[in-house]
Length: 247
Ligand SMILES: NC(=O)c1ccc[n+]([C@@H]2O[C@H](COP(=O)([O-])OP(=O)(O)OC[C@H]3O[C@@H](n4cnc5c(N)ncnc54)[C@H](OP(=O)(O)O)[C@@H]3O)[C@@H](O)[C@H]2O)c1
Image 1 (cartoon, rainbow, N blue to C red):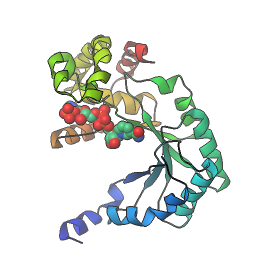
Image 2: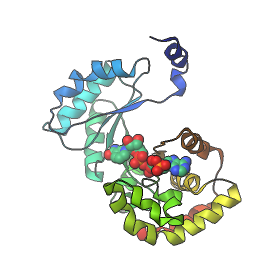
Image 3: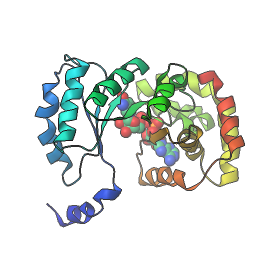
């Protein structure tokens, strides 16, 4: 192990490491089979959260969550999560884990100011009811919620096909929202992206956390700073109202 890694190791308690098992075309036995490799790759960090990436495996939920429970009981991981599970599937996972004396820590789903489906399809309500954290993936909706494409629509031309397709309708539809976010951002001396993330992690109390993707150190720094300010109740509610088209 390098000296640098040892220095980082001292901060292990401050860094939360989450990883995922990909269930597609696999059986639950691979959860236990792959854990040693996973631990080696992540060494010297401990796996704080191990998630099942999606609800599609050749094995039953019972077998998958039994395997995850074994990993927890054997001390390989610190908590269990899921990703892209529906409300019904969350409840099933929660119940199986409860039978083993464990909690379901989180469900990682796409949630942002312009992707609010989880508020109407039962996922958010279930999370609140069962105490499951929602981890929002693509919380900036792949950069749309930074406002940079609204400012210069030609920038979408340089995007990869998937992201370009995704952005087309949403940019026009979210112009009013972005204009309002820009004013709020100015008043807090932050960026539009920071307003988008701040809304996500505060509007529903403690239920939602976000994992923005950063391609530059400056973005990572700004994304971390989102926890240093708080939108007012009026601002939170105004943004909720302005983004109702995306429910
Ligand atoms: N569970 C799942 O099924 C699933 C699916 C998709 C993604 N994810 C996870 O979600 C995380 C984030 O996803 P994502 O990268 O697609 O989405 P995102 O956070 O919505 O968007 C990231 C993009 O926004 C821009 N950006 C980020 N921070 C910024 C800042 N402070 N200021 C200005 N621009 C900023 C960057 O664009 P530029 O590069 O253009 O500057 C970056 O590529 C990743 O960890 C990913 O693995 C999970």
